[in-house]
Length: 552
Ligand SMILES: [Zn+2]
Image 1: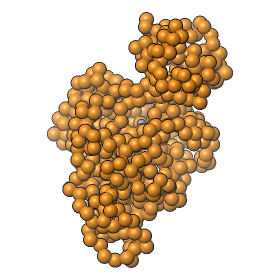
Image 2 (image 1 turned 90 degrees about the vertical axis):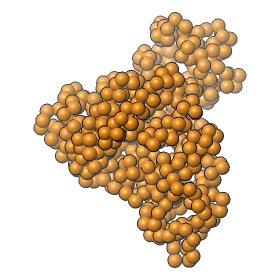
Image 3 (image 1 turned 60 degrees about the vertical axis):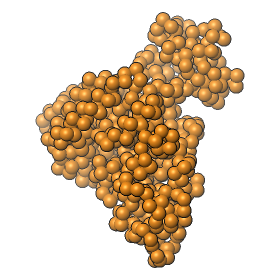
Image 4 (image 1 turned 45 degrees about the horizontal axis):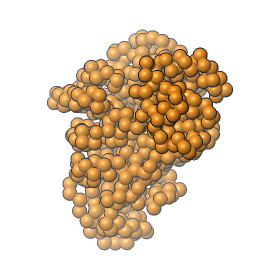
């Protein structure tokens, strides 16, 4: 007797082999039989007309904290994602001494746009070690977790306040190596580092103070286990990104480790950038290095209101400063004609027309009906103001709760993106799930891969698209026995309608601790998701299964 039998599905097994009609039998969390299966099962899932594929794997998330109160990483599981990699971009919840928590929360708030309440209201923070964090997750997870450990927190643990003030000495580097080793022993899938991020005081994050000797020493430890180095390169300057690709390649070859960097965007203003990076990656792979660029499927959209800081203002320090003030002080600043004049002056001689004119008022609780759906340039014309001034005025008149959408900020030419996503050396990822909560919803990047690049553009076949986000990801990251429909593998399986699978519209929900807001997208066309053989989502609802495991 099997535990579960999936009948008559179109099996897309992750290898990119042509789909075939068959059954999948599951026993004790693993795939027991594939093909024509006779025999009974406690649970039969009829998959006639549907695809049965390996569960999707998301290699770039910041679900570190959400998993503590929401083990399904909602709505990722509903989109068919059965395994996630948290701990990217040099930040993880462990190892971390209790007295450094406020610092880490500040970094998550600044870099990943996560509210402090997410760290203080929904769980008891009882651990300091990596193993302790893992134990805290163990009984709560409904998805599989392959956590990275963050270079910035490793540095903080060993160097304290000096972590973002100076380079490490030999003794500190050795202590970091030992600490990283304990994390890898406890199942960390690799180390993440960042060359660009700043903390909440505007200081470079600790990982940026590492000299090459330190990174090299940590990679030597990764080499003992063959684990991953993830990094955020200077993505805003392609020459620097190319130099990072070369550096990652050296580390990869020297220590025999896989490396990956993200994000890699295609930007129409600099159309040679992404192809240059991919060409350099090809050259480095040809030498035997493994340097996987991560590319997202979705175009870049950012939403924001003046209720909180936003990525949108990243290049406008004065705006950032004002938006970081507590609400009362922020309102006062925005009412000061002096401050506002300076803010608008920072937008340049066009008063923000180029940067803000194309913004669309998307809603927010207080947005007046007559402006919703309109462009800021029109609204500004009606008001007889420059766009920057109109944005501040309209926000102030409505308690700041007016949301603006900046659509099409790049990575939007589906023709170009499709061929890059299909490239054998481009790793599909960089969803950033769990982060940038009030800026955009990353959930549904997998559905969008199928709706946009398989069905609409035909940039790749269904089988290729499935391989890209299952077997290929498992192989790149060394996630054992995942990513394929094959006897003996973990039974992570998604049953979906290949004609329907897509991402829903972006919408605001208030389900973060402290009723915090975030944008999400519902899944479309995903019928049933099994994690380690247990039905964890079906027909629009999460079950109460907690069948997630650690991948290592
Ligand atoms: Zn990230």
